Image (cartoon, helix red, strand yellow):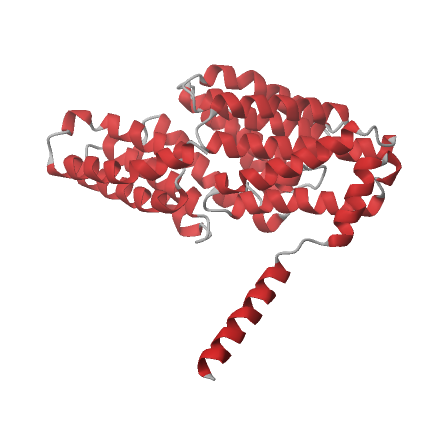
Length: 351
């Protein structure tokens, strides 16, 4: 009887789990009608697609392994594309173009985090076309801002500036302050990488002023929900720290980076790994090898969970700065740790 009871419970549990994974069949039926008949693209279907589009952005922000979302998001873009190909009515077409822009940008963000700049740029460019088609200037501006990350973190910061300047022009007058504040923070890091301390300070000041003012306005889905906003006072601390790292002012950078760590949501481990690498770099600049290695090893422990190729690139850049100390015990131990993490990073980068 015990054996039969266990068997029954396992079957019942399996049925429960299986039923929980069945999609909303009503939505599927409406989607099938929409694909076959353009007039079937009704507002309830569009509302559902909008919910999925927003939810995918939330999943990306909160995810520890963003490339695992790639299949779901790509499938969502395929559905949107099919609906656009069916020549829907003008109002539906406008909304679908927005969903396409948001989703293409999200795939670009995922690919960028995975270290695939070429493919990320392709998706950003398509996203820009879709945002232009639906006449959403602020969304267009946000995509330009994200696209600027490719030259910024690819060693070509100068070519990031025109993208950010165009983004601010697009967003002027209509965007919420949080959007424009983020753009100024990114420009501050660009100016720091170009060793323009005055330009960096001006950009940081503009960003802080806008964050404090907090005026509402148009946003993209990236900035739509304050509970997972990608830019807050805490994020600005991280940008300040990164800027002073680039400007070779390690003491000042440490103050902001430590404040950033203290104010950071514990679930944002991807962001924490970036901050730890920046903090490690300040110790390299101060020739404190043990502290530098300790902080980057903490970042590597997080990378075993997130598997972020982009952050791993930062780790390798940090290690390059330690080359003259490569024979020390601390650096040798760090090399072994990097070697142990490498296979999982390569796996994710291939997705």
